[in-house]
Length: 362
Image 1 (tube, rainbow, N blue to C red):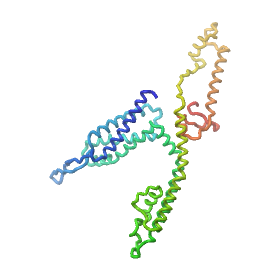
Image 2 (cartoon, one colour; image 1 turned 180 degrees about the vertical axis):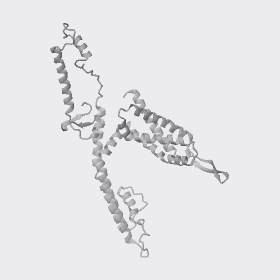
Image 3 (cartoon, one colour; image 1 turned 120 degrees about the vertical axis):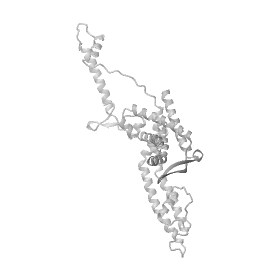
Image 4 (spheres, rainbow, N blue to C red; image 1 turned 45 degrees about the horizontal axis):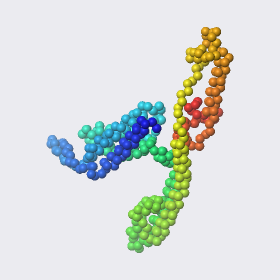
């Protein structure tokens, strides 16, 4: 990596970590002291002063966040300016996260000096949506290969995740219903609702218990108290273990595949870009000069000659260029589009006749 780019990447990583740390510290009560504030209210013809209390974040944390936002703004603008494809830049998820995380700070600074009720309401809303700053953690994917591999794995395992969600939903519905009726077996005779002795007052409450049990968390806030309910709980735990274990190997295999590709890419030698000048076009002044200066040029003519040797060279160059173009045209279809992004391969498109060709070589 170029040293300048390394320093810029390190600075970006540093500001991301500082911003996230500042966001977490702002929620601590030590950095949010309670202050007394006054507000004038007009009641009829009289003006009354109302004293109220609210928490106020320490100023130094606000300054640190401001410095981080300035850096993120500079970084965002530079990427916008130098991005060759603006539409692809706008559609990128990480760029949307950058913009959403930066915007509330400037709106909050602009509205902080206003005293109208609408401005205060908007300011209060912006303070609530400060949580979007935590989304900056996803920017770390630009600097860590492992996080990018994890993202590719999650996208490639969408079907497995959907299958897992469906299995869990079915299990939650079945076992929540079973635990509700199982707990009603031990109801007291003088209890018409049959729910005084149990935590499971209805089936929707059982949904939470079923999720916690199937995922083997077991918070202990709800538990069966009858022998039939305990039997249902045991079955629910076993079903949860089996349900989660089924799609996990597929997800692990996807992660191993993408991780191997990423490691293979890092071990590949870096290609140096070579500037290959184009041969002069037929009839151009440069071509005339090259022919005149060539050792095979006949000095008996003042015009640009097309001798037999020069024509052979032109034909050889044209055939060589055509050969390279055809070789680049017939490429094999890649198994995953994500592999293209991992190896920085340009996208493959369909050409005429259904043949595959590289968009950059066309």
